Length: 196
Image 1 (tube, rainbow, N blue to C red):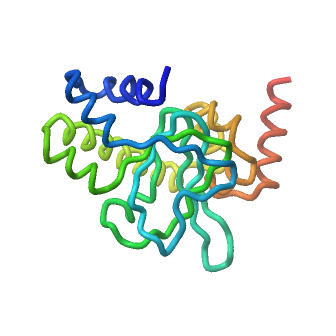
Image 2: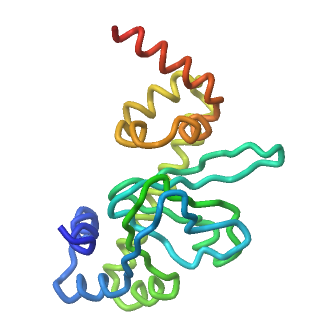
């Protein structure tokens, strides 16, 4: 399956394109390869693109005043990633977005996305659904962080995203969960002991 075919399969779970619309949509994207530890977004620079991950893994994070890293989002195969505040409002980014693995992505420029959305209602619908899903996911995450213990957050993450948990470094997962790497090790050991 080519990168574009994979994107089409992803899109058609949400909307239906005609053959002509599928061609127009694909033509708005560009394929890129990203090396492990390479940044695709850095603070201070405007995020001009959003990225569909064909294959690979990415982490979006910020650095707090104390120098601590806080993971905001992960993205693996068949997920989207960007610094959405920067991308949507075309203002300087506040996040780093870095590849955790050698990755293959499809990227679309902000202007090309706007052109797509103004050209056909179905494109507008697709990107709206994408935005709604992202907003719902972020809201669920905030609620989970406010109402669940660290152990509950870890268990929920493993249950919902087992593929991500097995592919991202322990320090990145710990910072996503809002705990230290040491505490995550304890939770993993405790879980392993329960299973044995």
